Length: 495
Image (cartoon, rainbow, N blue to C red):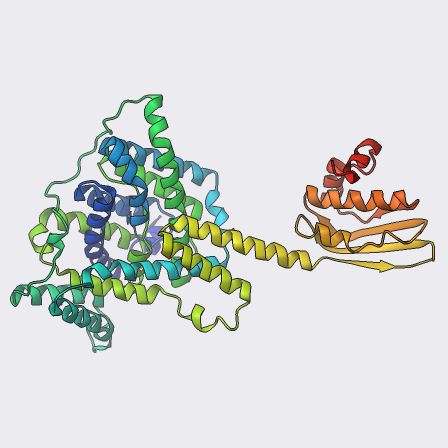
């Protein structure tokens, strides 16, 4: 127990606490902005970010990853809030958590192993672009002071670590925020601040049940939204966990993360917060600021609540230019520049999957759609590649005998190629199919085998099947029809 606490909680205490402050400051304007997108009061997003970050610190499967209210989730809530109000959103948030816990127990987090590297890279690059584009409204048509402060913030972020002694002691993003806020207050610089984003709450959240009737009609209203929120939330969380795994050179428990996200969303809905999930931007900030353990996520949520409730007047003075500088740093650090420089070395299919994922996510702002299309493309390319590795070799032991050796995987994509390997025009007495180095996977493969056997038999040949492994034998015994005359005739007739 003590070893577990030290490893996951207190092995990096100072850096985790400082990183939590940086993350909390970066969460505030985003939580407010996401609340506005969803059409709810800013405190809904702020309470959600606090609750999710704190709960996931204990229940999540990926230490050092930050979860809170997110834009991807907020976009899915707009119609529900507009048509049914906040109470139904809170109920949908609770149901989202229940569904996510169910996904965890079904071990759906393990499906991440089917997401290829090119899809993950495309997802990362798309998010980096979206993070950068999200800063443009703060810079478009702004005064020269805003540009100067943003440039100064970037200079502090990238140059401060090179200072002797203190350069490695304090996170440079935190130094950037403190210095620019002090500068704006001392010199009374007229720039947009956090206070201009919306009113900060001044009370602690209260635990309560959503004020909705517990009826089937309510369930039918919120279920479609909850299902969409659960899928998008888990997808973004699993992708972010994979990225943090690589950044920290450590492993995470994806199924535990599913359950943890569910617990966090249930409690969030019960304190008046909106559904959320992992945030790649804030997770990158946390990692780059030195955060590694669960304490960093707990600190981020705790600092967030303390700041907005008790230090609201001070937080409202933070210039948005300081946070823009931090987010630009995140975008630059998140983007996989190697994926661009190595495109010449990578196969064309890998580049197509990566670029397609980026384009769809950026154009639609739909992370789930981009990843879905990327996975689909990667699967099609993989199936095509495997199908070309299947070969049929012909041998002639005697003039009246033919032996065909099938090597490789026979499935829907290689079934036609499998049939092309046989010569049905020559007249022979015996045909032997050696399947010892082949594997038949599906009904398309079995159907192709049926057609080969039946065509040879119609030429008057005796067909022998040899060397089938147990799995191939089982699927052929179950699905094959070449030994059933009436079904065999129908197969070649096209029925």
